[in-house]
Length: 99
Image 1 (cartoon, rainbow, N blue to C red):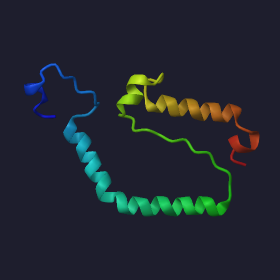
Image 2: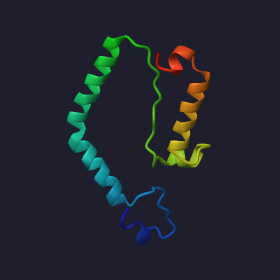
Image 3: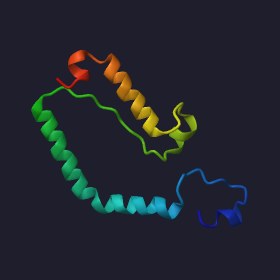
Image 4: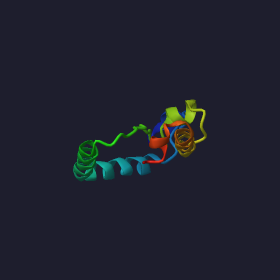
């Protein structure tokens, strides 16, 4: 990536952040992944044990090029806001309020 301007002068970098910043984030994620997995596994077990109904909304990284290029939303925050508002207005009453 660092030699791209030299070998490919017309190449346009699609990411938001510089590669070093982006890769540093992945290194951090790798470093804490074992502890994070334990925390997530515990939370999922508690959720399953509660037998409470829940809804799942998968997310992409805010920097994901496919989201930025092909999504009708300006950013991930806008998409999340729209989903939450839609859920609040259209979900069954006993689900939208959490009761």
